[in-house]
Length: 57
Image 1 (cartoon, rainbow, N blue to C red):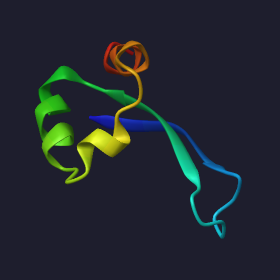
Image 2: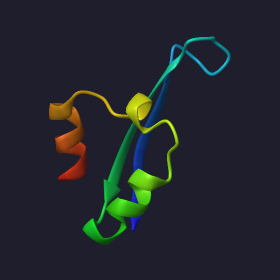
Image 3: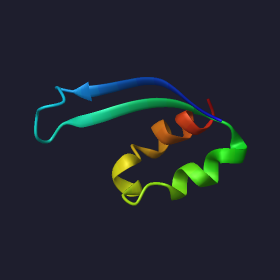
Image 4: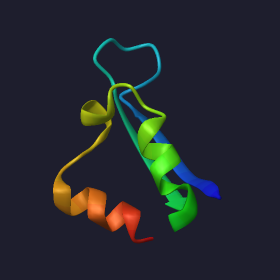
C-alpha cells in the first residue's frame, strides 16, 4: 500500500524550476514497485538520510 501523507509544491505550480516535496507511507511489499516506477529516480531521491527516513515510516 502507498499512502500519500502530504504534497507540497514550492513556490507554486506555475513556477519553472519548482521543487516538490512528497511525504508517503509505503509498505515493504510495494517498495520495489515504487522505486521502479520512476524513470528519473535520482531526481526524486533527496539526501540518503532523508530518504531512509521516508522508507522507514
